[in-house]
Figure 1 (cartoon, rainbow, N blue to C red):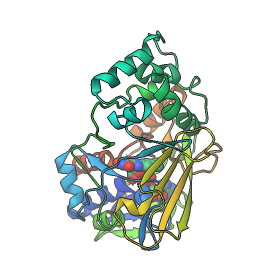
Figure 2 (cartoon, rainbow, N blue to C red):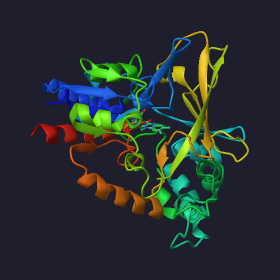
Figure 3 (spheres, protein in one colour):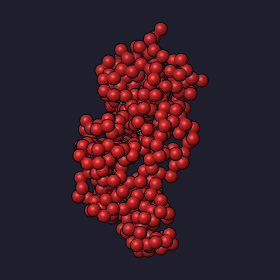
Figure 4 (cartoon, rainbow, N blue to C red):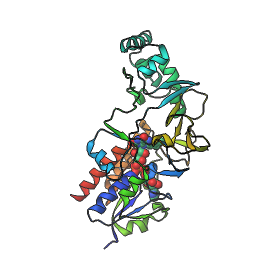
Length: 367
Ligand code: FDA
């Protein structure tokens, strides 16, 4: 008889949700994480009494009432609405592209005027089958918005020219003909009062957690102590990179404390010109309407050299998807191991999606 029903590798939202459901059902779980904190990428660090989103800005949003209720069991959410500002060489524009953006760009005041302006901008381009991201964006919104708000931001993000990037990356671009700066269309949105750690603490309550513990440091030992393993780390690493490494885009975060109450007046500012080396600046206190006397900001830089960097965004191109398929076939054959979460599935998940996925997998287990 093994000591635990489940060994859960990774205390991010997937692992923590799975552990929560299983513990609730009376199963004995052990969660291990190689980091010195639980919560994976939603972890917040308290600096100057401000919850700093340590791995990038996280805004919870969903259309699903049951998922909204699920996270609200652990703490109440505030009414934060994401409305980023784009800064192009000192000119400020509202995002997502809406009537405020169009007014600032062209002085158009009615939806009809704005639609006409965009149609005129696109008309002469005659792009029918966009061959790359640049053509796709031009076809959707025309050259003014493309140049000031898309081109350089995207090129910095991917470290490639927009003409070398595939068109599918931006199938759609949210264009709104109302004066609505709310970035998300979802019914429910907000930031947990007291920060994301409250959610993680709630999920992991009553569950054994070991931090600073890497599964790969002694995988045979870990395999021996539980009936089943839930693995939320990198799938390629699990199989010793036997088909090659899956590629990720990465980011570098620089955190600064400023001796001022209000640095930029908004939680998220995107820098959409080519010259500014960072892509975004977050001012964390604005996620929680903070009134502290100091402020903490994070500059988010796209990282070109991704060797040994933290993996953030999967690169879902043909090469990587083909490699992933091979790993998935091995995963299917791996007995008593459940692969879940963004790294084990090599896919971009929003928070509500990763919770939904963990809830489905835990339900299947309990059947
Ligand atoms: P996650 O990476 O959080 O957890 C995996 C855990 O496993 C980590 O703690 C890791 O240390 C651990 N681990 C890995 N290998 C291990 C090993 N060998 N041994 C032990 N432990 C190991 N979503 C959203 O809804 N709104 C938003 O605004 C944002 N914003 C955002 C910004 C940025 C920059 C990124 C990259 C992502 C977002 N997201 C988001 C997505 C969100 O971060 C994501 O959905 C969840 O954090 C995914 O949780 P997981 O548990 O899948 O992975």
